[in-house]
Length: 149
Length: 149
Image (tube, rainbow over all chains, first blue to last red; front, side, top):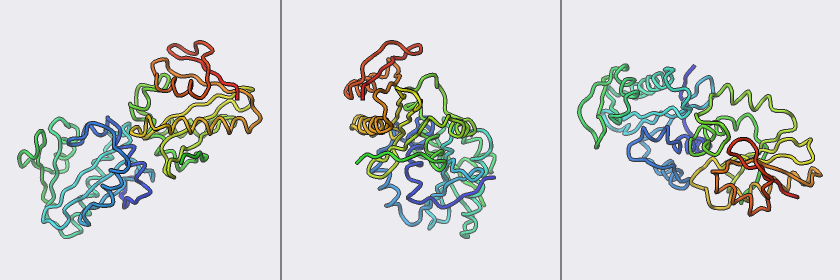
């Protein structure tokens, strides 16, 4: 069973641990080393109010994160990672993103978009399977994808 | 400020995240991939009662683990890791091990021992600085060290 719950400050050490794992951050844009606590806390506290982070619970334990941004835009952005790397390939990320898309739709949105590293083939496949289409290039090495909700 | 508190089941996701980071587990004996949840929980639940795990709190946030084993032996074993890798080199591990040694001494013990990978020079230096002496070889690639408390 996969569900999303709002991330809070008590989740910050776990999120830091996940985001500091090279196996995880190799999928992130422009991160090539583990994170420093102070910057991590600042990131969480100073995000615009139009950003939401959710902890992915799998069988009620935290295993990853879905982040939704630009909720004021007609096409919000969605991002995700499974921090518990041995769970990759089991469809948990796909279900979590699907729940994130439901959330975006419930906000009255008709579209959403994401960016993903070209080399992250697993994630590109996941997004394709949910109906995301490639719109073009985002930043260097990144694909820009979008979906009608 | 560094202090140790007993690890409980609620700490298992964070401990799994730390122990699944290649930067961390490269210092462990015979681990070359991230951990699977079920095995991790089993390890925690089925340890002998003579083993204790403590969460290292640094400024009240969890940053690593001290494990003390064979508490029934005249020379218990101590192990540790700092899971928040960007804190390495700040003396937090040293202080945590020092607190672990105090705990062992409070149990009425006069000695303790540890094993450490030869290639883990940082940890060997830390243990030397706390008075650990090399007794010889442990398992392949590992040094056996001990200290009078």
